[in-house]
Length: 421
Image (cartoon, rainbow, N blue to C red; front, side, top):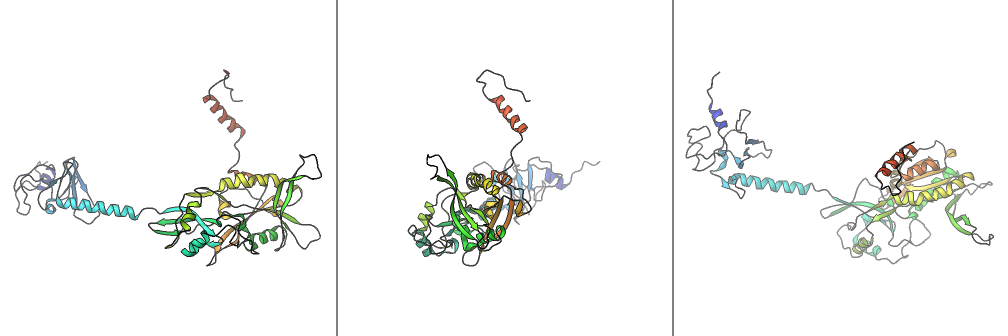
């Protein structure tokens, strides 16, 4: 085998960063097309290939469209002699960088910073979805100021009808997610309102008619509210028991000799996090443009609304109502239902304890309107499992966990830990 090396070999085996002297080229010979000044660093004018022998040489295949860059990990980033413009400039770190390379690096860093800024994710927060029934995102700045400064009980509730004034401080009917990118604020598309006021479910009587039609065979049930349900006999006078529990609403069939009725509960959602006070401080002075971005971080608290509020009501009322041969209707919106764990359903109204009337919101171009979404029929036991977020663990698993914790607990009584049975 011949030991003769080609000019390319000699060129590529020449260590990068070696000082060269006047007129020497990468191939080790003089060349008029590659003059170098004394003390410059010699660089190969062509890309290295697999025959490269200097372990410190790296090839940067950049996608910027600029000429390729050679990298010597010992000395920094360099350009080929054809692009150097003559000589290198030592930087603060002791690496040799030519003028064009420094300019290229600065340009790329600037472009990377701009791209990073351009790709910055928008800020998303929950804020006012509806204010006194109005679509907040569609309000003009003067209208926002007027409603935010309105006195308590001075604005009518659009869902109760009859000119009844809103009795909710601030008049926020629902929450909604908003997105902020730079100075642009807009409602987050493909997301739903989340009702925070129970009166929101009375919109145009849609949910009540749906429940009456499903459970009582009537679209126009008679609506009765605040009926006594649990009575206290703690006082000596049993003839005047005090009410300790009420059914919020009862729907009654209007045209039947036999009394037909069902109980009905509505469940809005509480929220946790920042209060709305800072939002209203901004709304009261808002001059635009557009709408203000929510000032605090908050979220719908489905856990407090479901297991802590709705579930005890169902556990108290449903057993008795079922023994009486009647049904419980529950009205919630779609985000609330989707927050629950999976619930096993029954196939017919006659087999259910609870009928869940899940509603959604449709924008008609001016405001959001309530409309039916889906009906779910469940027993009380399966509903409780869904509200609590799952089914109970087995006794064996529970006691296995209990014993493992006992093993780590301080043995204050001096007795030994029990063994599994």
